[in-house]
Length: 394
Image 1 (spheres, rainbow, N blue to C red):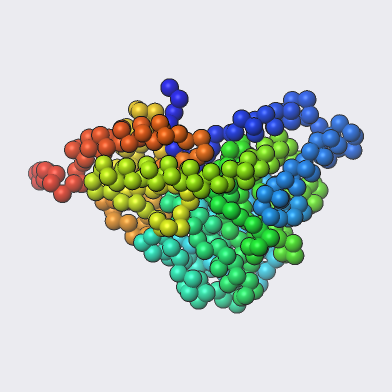
Image 2: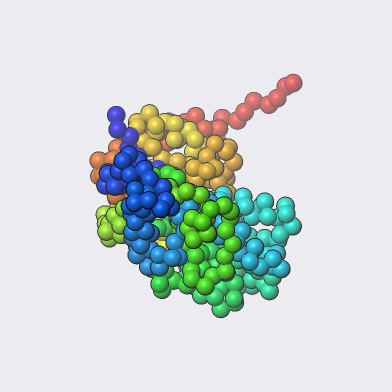
């Protein structure tokens, strides 16, 4: 049985057109793009075109695109570069709801003697721009705020944040891994200094990403070695992955209207159906400023892991939050930061759709989920009418 795949914020299906574009570079076109001979040179030419295509999709210049292995590498490189170019500045600002690629690095930097300010969010996952402004100091090296939250889909006011940082003379980095391909991003108009994206979130394969570095932004490479990427990221280029990413980004640009109309409508229909059929559930995140494909719903009195296991029996794939934090029995750090009540936070499920999601798949979820929740609530020790546990007599 084909899965009903609603976990696209974790990873996406590689688009058929993307597979077709990358196959030659996994077979007959295997030359090293840095080689002097024509066999490698034709691969180098294809890589150059892919860089131009990626830049065009972002509203950037080709020389501002650095190919990496993933979003985590891009995030780490951006933040560590900002600290390296300003060794006298030992402070950075981020949020409590970032992806582990940023939060884990921030914790690591604290152990190395850096100071980190973690901005809070309100009950809808929204930032306070005034708090951000107050947090920037003379010794702040970089501000890192994600473009859109991977769990709730909440979109942050990146243009305003970028303008604020620019006015204060502070480097600004955004993790746009979840946003690229889902919302319109034009870096020619958006004054961010560094931006990270990852191919496997937009129907390219795993193992390829981008770090955008605006022209004139001071920069220090993370990987040291060869001359690849104009000396900014050592290592032989993942040519097949880069070709695939360029193709995927062109497809995403062509489908951006469908993402924000058809996919959004499917998401809204799924969400409205769940709220109508299942009592005691709430939507997490900003209802107005949210990714068009993402719905995080919290179900009272049940465990998210149990919901996922039962949905899996119907062939339905969803998640309880970030794939990089799955397996933890603790409630999501994002939901904790938002102040979602404990009885709801433990039962939060993220449904993330794609342009391949169908009406029939949404129908299956709406037919299956209410019974799953009802079954689990009958067994739940957390519900208000649950029988009292017997007193310990040991």
